[in-house]
Amino acid sequence: MTRRPTYRLGAYVALAVVAVVGGLALARPELVALAASPALLVGLGLITGRRLDVGVGVAVDRQRGVEGQDLELLVTLTAIGRAARVEVAIVLPNGLTAIDDAVIVRLEAGVARSLRVAVRCERWGAYRLGAVRLRVVDPYGMFSATAATRPTTTLKVYPQAPVLRRLLAPLETQLQLGAVRSRHRATGVELAELRPYIPGDDARAISWRATARRQELWVAERHPERSGDVVLVLDTLAEARAGEAGTLDLAVRAATVLLSGHLARRDRVGIVGLGGTVTWLRPGMGAVQRYRLIDALLSSRILPTAVWAGAAGVPVRALPPQALVIGLSPLLDARVVAAFADLAGRSVDMALVELDPDAFLPSAADEADRLARRLWALERDNVRRRFLRRGVAVAPWRPHEPFETALTRMEAFRRTTRRASA
Image 1 (cartoon, rainbow, N blue to C red):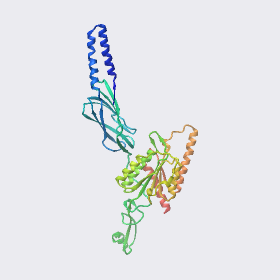
Image 2 (image 1 turned 60 degrees about the vertical axis):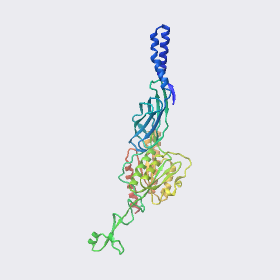
Image 3 (image 1 turned 180 degrees about the horizontal axis):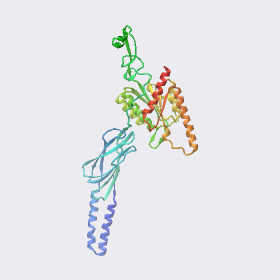
Image 4 (image 1 turned 135 degrees about the horizontal axis):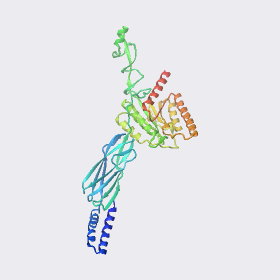
């Protein structure tokens, strides 16, 4: 910390000099005596202000938080030299807000003092905390020193994930137990059909009510409950943005809601990021997988690139057989549209959530802009129709709508398509 004189030191020195010179010039001893007080204060300031060092330690009460949640930042100050007055200013990145970001405290030599600062999580993301600006002043206010510390603590703020009342079900399930009704017939809860008894059938499957009515043995076949594989595909190649909000923000929120719901249903969930580089996590289940997925979402960034591998760059292990693929994209880049079309051409069970970019676009300024906007809307409608003809459910999601609205639209289309194919 570099020591600098304050305005008070200059004022006291000037007062003492003026009093001494005036007393000698006017032969007035009382003026010379008047200079004793400021001169004494200057001398004490020179002695006490030799070393103005303060030790700083910053810690947060938790490493993870949720949007809208308040956390507590603990700042520990220790005066290494003499007692001093310290002005503390908390420096926080965008997305975090401190209720009291500036505090003035007095420190005694060698005594640690802790400050608790409430921090509100305004937006999801991974943040580095611990940046503090200090201004240390000696007890007499003659010298001051400034310093700044670097961030030392990591805080991860997760998006809010409201509970969904319904989720998309994959066309084919896996062998693990879960909460998705399988189309196959085995031991389960939900009734599939009744049929006459065949020698070799399990006696526990006999429906005694139907047997009593028909006067012969009848067997109840049921649908087992299995788990499914779900892969979330995020478009990180292009976005529409207005200030802090954008379609990538919608994609992260939607992915957080979906993975939380499917993991709670005991499905295996994975993630694929289609951007400058293809990033992916294999499908898994459990609390550990949830943290892995959300941490991957927090590091999502838009990475435009001219080198594009398309769907061929997605590893085979990232898309297991019979997995439900849910795409989250504004469908702005033709390369991403082609990648989704390629996946649909492989007979992949897929659904698309179109993150509506209209809410992030400026209003049309003149008739030419309105005409261009209508033509662009027609092109986007043509893209949707191409996917619908392939049997891919496409539903737009707007920022002011609940996400469950888009899921309801996709579920209705998938139910209609399933009936038509049957």
